[in-house]
Amino acid sequence: MTSASFFSENLVIHPSAKCKVKRLIDILGGIVGLVITAILLIPIAMLMQLDDPGPVFYSQTRCGLNGKNFRIWKFRSMIVNADKQKHLIANQAAGHIFKNEDDPRITRVGKFLRKTSLDEFPQFLNVLLGDMSLVGTRPPTLDEVENYDSHHFERLRVKPGITGQWQVNGRSTVLDFEEIVKMDLDYQDKWSCLHDLNLILQTVLVVIARKGAY
Image (cartoon, rainbow, N blue to C red; front, side, top):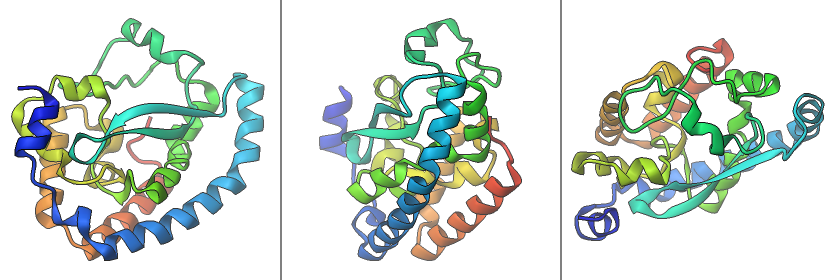
């Protein structure tokens, strides 16, 4: 069975994806986030050009709600054309994710952006466009989804999020994809707008403490 047929025939959309209150929170949060992103844009761009000249933004096609493809936006944290060198880097994670603590493709400014999660701020545009939510699941790459087992698709019943339970429970230190899936499904079981607000608050505290990111 192809991923496309699985989406169309088997996946039941989670109630959070249709909740108007959640969408309102996303819109308000997205506006605030984009204002902050605009303020940060010039200093980040200047530092980036001094460190590793090239595009300020990085975009990649990701898999969203019900398997819908969308283009995600971030501040570039790696060297130009880093994707073409991915096969040269050892994967330290287990399952359908890619992580390397000492990835040589990450620039000096990029390390700071990742440590502080500033590289994620352009994703507030994705939130306003409706492709993402403030809170949800980690948005997978297309090649990751192509290798999914049937139970992995359940995590695509909700919109991908800038943050989620994986973000407040280890971030980059979570190296087992099955653990991420468990947290994503647990989020679906626990979901409410109050739970989302609580996860947003926890994310702010985790980012301030700079825990678990590299």
